[in-house]
Image 1 (cartoon, rainbow, N blue to C red):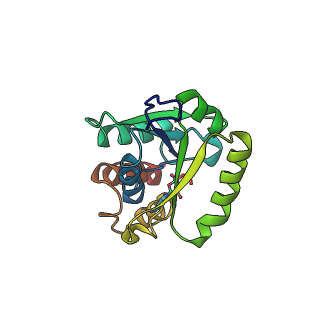
Image 2: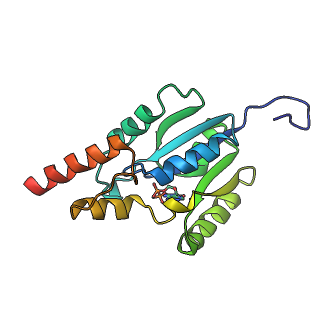
Image 3: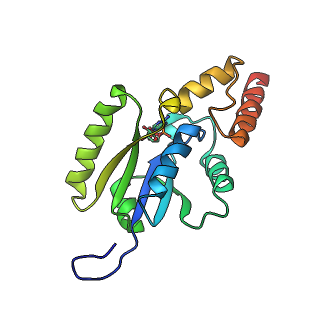
Length: 172
Ligand code: ADP
């Protein structure tokens, strides 16, 4: 992008989330975000209080494997205020995905709060393909725990890791 001063600046976008685990809905949003930015940082929230199924390290490893060989996609961990991390990385755009109206209220609140904290950063909402409009990490974990088929909803490596994690849990 050429700025008003005539300088060419790389457009860095940040896609934050828990990715516990990554789903095909996330991948759909990532592909759309890649087409809007020069560099996309997938920012994995280290949120121990949410008691994720996968450690941040595992969540990051899955994403890194999926985007190995894509120099425009970088996977990083973060904790603390999102806008602080965005500033640290030089991102001017925060990407969030919208599924249904139910996502809207929380996302709207967060976007306005982030704008107040960092007016120079814009939040952009993208919609995944409708076939993923009901897919969330939470629902996928629930279905997998109950023995349902989740292929086609998450990438194959996440499906295998999920099955392994659930088997490990049930042995406890
Ligand atoms: P968080 O805990 O921040 O909601 P998630 O990993 O659940 O983290 O989601 C990260 C982002 O991806 C959120 O903006 C969420 O709305 C979006 N997202 C997740 N699944 C989908 C989907 N199937 N379609 C569109 N957006 C999605």
